[in-house]
Image (cartoon, rainbow, N blue to C red; front, side, top):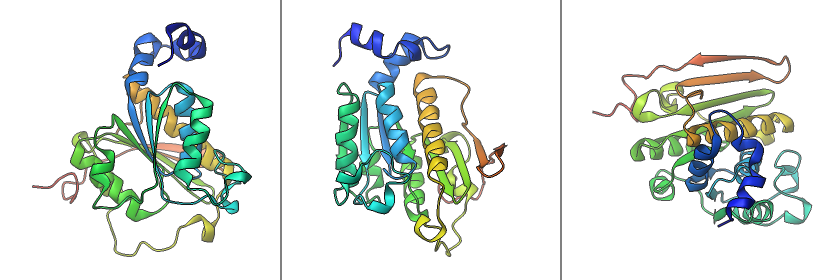
Length: 249
């Protein structure tokens, strides 16, 4: 645990912000945040959460660092290739901010284990890149009553939302399962590295605002962004009364 003077200096410009202050910084220090996916979105999100002084961060990813990851997964360097992503990310985060407790879980998220892996956390971030994992995060958070931040990128398009299944729409309301959820991976379709960074940084910003108790968040809304035109819009999300996840009888 860092001493008070260390925290005063390190987080000075964050604590000075209206809506955060000393109380918000304490809430952040006491928070336990799970980040599912340490890829293009998760990498910058993890860096910013650690830099901001999140008290405990759990990195969940069962992948290995590959050379083709490095154009967008900025938490890794060339020497990390072949290493488990969760472990490599944890090492980088501990070096960035030794006062933050980092848990590295080299584990694949599934419908069976999600609730166990996310239990006890204050907030979760869905930084995954495939539909099964996103649905697993959504179902687990719904079962636990856990708010979570969702970020996704596809080629030049980015999305960001905050889901609170207990009070509004969930991911399943927005994207009902169709049974045909193939393709879409960035190795087939490509992704602009800086766009992943933008969405990841925005995920961290929403997480910080939520933990600090700020009212101005994306809760119940979806931000859509086009990196080619720099056009974007925010749409309100509606709960699906027939949703099989958040509207179970």
